[in-house]
Length: 110
Length: 115
Image (cartoon, rainbow over all chains, first blue to last red):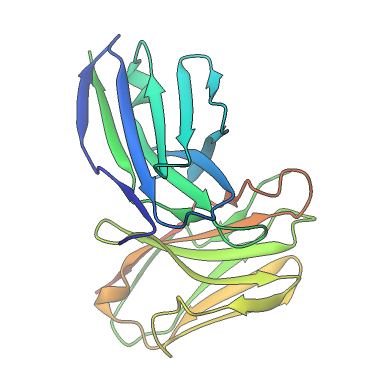
């Protein structure tokens, strides 16, 4: 089983739609979780951290289910500028390197 | 801060040639990571350093790949000899052990094409 698994997509959604991405991770001892965003031909950048209690940043909501080893990202009222690849990221422990999923590609269509 | 700096941004070379990729991490960051990204494999960690010391190079594909970090502000990834299957985007990233220790900052990447 891969350490971090995501549906590669692509997800093609109209502007204004709500879209959700899911991710599973294999290491139950993993300590922290993130979503990174990568635009076409650019580097990955941190979008948001994922907390056990769930957290929201504007139109973006991230949730963590430790029992199921499952992370989600919800985007409401999609914008054209949300088109990108969203990478699910896990920190196994402390100062170990982050582990990246392969990403889920989102295209928001006018 | 200028962020993580990588050079060159693009490299086209012929099979068998030596390729050297360069990285300058963010000042004050004590971790440096080299990744390779392809469509098939996604982002793969090649090697990482802590305080200029290589910690884990298990992701380096084979002996043709080597990496050094002679000081806190510079690292190189060398491929010798290069092969077409090495074609990928190579990212360097850095992070700190401070409060924001979980966020890795990536450079813009070097797009390598080996013909």
